[in-house]
Length: 167
Figure (cartoon, one colour):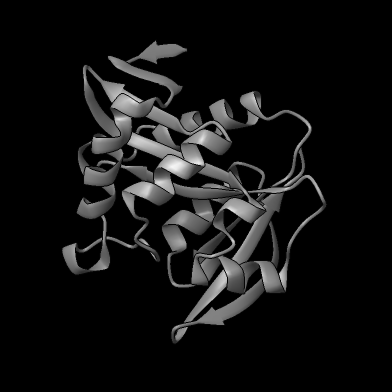
């Protein structure tokens, strides 16, 4: 657990689910966001039971989160299934993302802090993610984190980049 600028980075608990779902909704494309999937509360609960989910809290408000799950837990999500068909990583690899940061908190290194917290909690394991090819800000941010491009795929008329890091 760490805090700076009044923001605490911690492992998510059941009490954080409403805040995660609300922040996800605020970042859907129809609201100007860039998320490529909408996960149900049940899917997020399954992820919470599977691997650590990381949240950023300002007081009780969720101002950022990073989801993660083993491949079998999220393989039913169509865009993730398409990604894994193109690059699945090694046997112990997991899927992570999205990293979502509230608009008011962007540009302060919060995505990097969430990412570092996840890596600390899952040492020695490879993480795989995808980013829409036209999301240059997210691609730049992940490359600064040391994530490497592994390939591309197309899903629902959008091009995506598959990236990963080695634990």
